[in-house]
Image 1: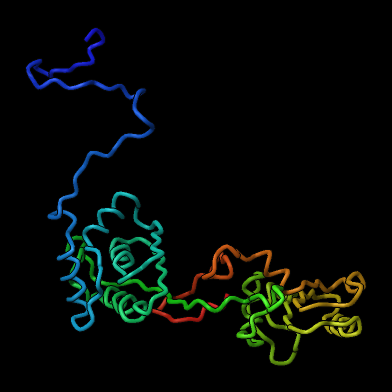
Image 2 (image 1 turned 45 degrees about the vertical axis):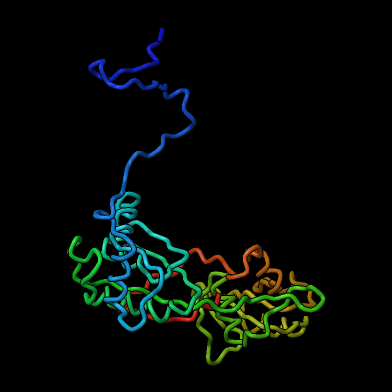
Length: 289
């Protein structure tokens, strides 16, 4: 009572309660709000939304679009990037798209093909009248890219050594290494050592073979003094300083330094993907890195 810990309300006649000061409360303040199902939907709403999109093959555990709309509205601004690493039926991507957010969805299940891609195509075409469509006045538009994750570039052999995955053929390996090393994959039809380029005079050559001093000398002579070449190979037996226009890297070592081996579902961390000049409604590609 001396420090007014007991509070009887503004008029002094209410039921007494204990006053707590902010300095005595654990870090942070508990949110004191209730999200009513009239405002953010419920499971039955979500089921109706997904059945309207896929009457013959409804997804089992969808989320209502109004719920995701509330979360995205509170946490982001238009143009922000929304990530859903367990995409499910694609509700987060659909809602983010309608709200003018950029989005990335990841899904390893087959419903990626049966539900997510068809759903997003309907959103883009303006053929998804349910969910928050009327709330945000969505009429269609935009686009997306669809990538399939390729197998890991490296795997351990029976002795526990990292080796190139035999599932990769020469073309797949070259394209993966170009992306990994920051080169544009553009194999030459006439020069075997040009698999890609970073500038008009800087090229990359990828091979699973071991290169000798004589082989490197021949390549160096073809490259010439006005160009430079990065060679990614299994091994090399040469004095590298003898070829100032060549840079040599061993593929397994190069890849190991850029891999996240505590994860078993991807090989590389790709920080930048070039923006296309024009994005179609949807585009399916194989992601080889």
